[in-house]
Length: 542
Image (cartoon, rainbow, N blue to C red; front, side, top):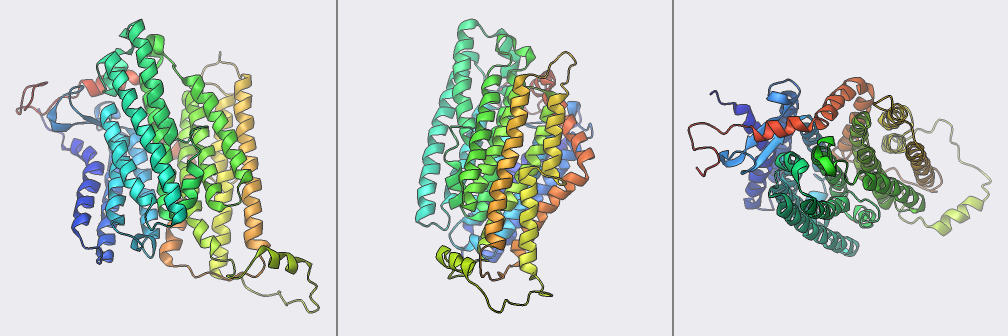
């Protein structure tokens, strides 16, 4: 039997940040530039590995386009299985791209105001990447805890009073969610005897009535832990405060971490509660649908009520998360395809916005106050200043254009990816996959909420833009460093690329969605993955 060494590539997104984080821990904090270079090199290597995995999963290199790595050479479901499919590879690429932007932005300031920033950043990436790749609930818990433990330190990094207060709330909420995670996992194991996702899905149809009740309770408790991370209403109260208090590069990574919960919900629900799951088929879908719609309402109201830009970004992320949860609960394959496109665009746009906020706040004059602005509004100038021919400083032009792009994408206005995503959502909702499926009042309600959330985003962002760029009185053009401008430009250019290349992107996402809706393929591929011959007998310790 010929060994497939490409399977070891699946381990790299977890192994690289683990080794790099351990190495950075040994480097003295005074060598900040050296630590930054190592950190950046690791992130770029993770990006390269993720791109290679995307190519392998989309080129029929592996059977069923699913790569399986059996840790310690134990066959599933006895050992730890990591899998790479089209969706997991895509999320790894998104993680590496966001990490690159956040790391570059932190180079001049944010990575220097505390200790162990680079080590914690790598451990954060290890947890996120592991959560995307693992196919076992207990190891998902392990990667979640690695991700959360690193995020605790990063949220408090460069601490001040507001950051400590928000960080303590963030830690307390996530510790409670971790406890629920463990309780849910224990109940699932007690009722089914397995925690491997493929094995769990294979056993669903055979679970007895009494065990099924226990299983549903365990899954519901487990779902609460994921929905806390996804900021589903009313569990997402912590998110706006944390976004506003965290440093910009960490807030950008928190945008992605919110999507980790939605990703797990998507993968777990389509695999375990598929139409082949017997009595448990479709369990919890209505709760996800209506909970997602309630989350959209909560996020839209929060955007309208917020004047602090950091909180506004947090509520924009909540709207995005609510839309994704509603899409998962709606249970339509074509809608999942568009939902994944929406996930990409909204994550990049909100991350760019949280990075941009700090730069925008620099343009306000140091001594400006609301009273002074009011007095200026009613003052009569006998000799108005000559404005014809006065150029806009380059920094102001960049901030204005970048803010406009973020606002267009978040609100879903043409011509950028936000509009393409929302138009695609409406098209999928009005054109069900099966001809006999009717467009119901729930469909119209979801569409109305998406439209109203976009209107709320327009009002909130337009109000913020007018106050900042137009009615803020005397302003000064800020000094921007190239490492601050490049990450924001990079993220927005990716949104533009999503718009221009919408056709190929939708084709890829359509194939990823089709894979998710073939649970039997996952079950067969994971449970039949062979161990490496000549080392030990299958199912026995080496």
